[in-house]
Length: 435
Ligand code: XLS
Ligand code: NI
Ligand code: NI
Image (cartoon, rainbow, N blue to C red; front, side, top):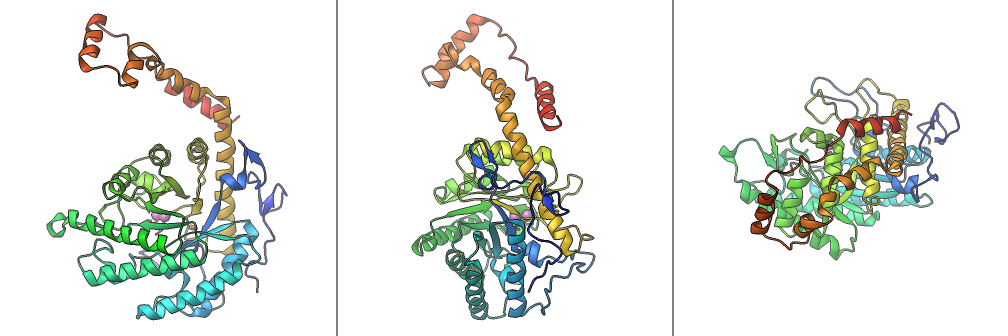
């Protein structure tokens, strides 16, 4: 049964109403196909689950797919709809939380049996397609038991339920051939220090992650684990504030070999950073893993999860991704949802076309910026005083504070550093973007 009869396969350059203007999967850009630079993924939760409900009103979109929500028939209809959707758009990956796939039962054994059943069904669907699982995760923030966190909970029993969910989500991820496993610290954080032992909570989160790595490796998971940093929401203070914080945490607890970052654009801006900043910090630490491709609204202080449309942002993001040599096990997961009044199935396709084309155009423009060379050349030149003389000695670690002091004193007063030329470089970028 088809759900999206109004559209055939969405393709590049057909000029049809539903088509890509920039995303040309086989086009080679800087040595790789667009589809290799941009392994797009569908987020099960937003695309197949979210109805547009918010704190002030019920949903506007009908995601029943002809079945009664809360049933396995509905869970299977979501699989059918999801695969039709991905195939029509040429999306090769999907991401899921355990409870996106099946309705959660009161008894975890029942939920687990449902997960076995639905993963068999998905596996069957995957056959004959080139669709794969990008990453899986466990929802450890929705159920009331996680009110005080999962790895950070004060209840050892609840901690065991978190462990059980991680174990099962890993089982399903491996069964579906998933390349990644995400820990987004849903409620791993706190509201007030009056009732919180931060050190103990962080140690316990690390213990849970360590057990996840041990178990995952023992069942043949060879992909990457990810932390998805986010500074706030739902908690006031989230422990994985940003990439720098999460990387420090991973190193402190010896998890840095198995984990990388899953960087979400909207989380970056919530942390007071740019998306590009978070990508750069991850990349220079060898931790750029995957991307949750969405966009926030700078006028709003929460995770609005919009489909990316700001080409300046996607360009600078792709600049980082190209410089990092691409994502290895990761991809571009549209952790994004339609706006509440865009409630039709047509809008779902429009949103993905917008997001995919925004990144494809960003890729093309980033490649042009790199080929133009102005930025790279400027940056190289900016630090050229370290290429020889006293500068080289500093970089080579062959000097001392005494020698540098003597050198400075002999100069009496240094020349000012060269101009940062920011406006000139911004103008250069604009001229490439809008030529
Ligand atoms: C929420 C997060 C979440 C993760 C997966 O803000 O972005 O959707 O990506 O748990
Ligand atoms: Ni996300
Ligand atoms: Ni988010």
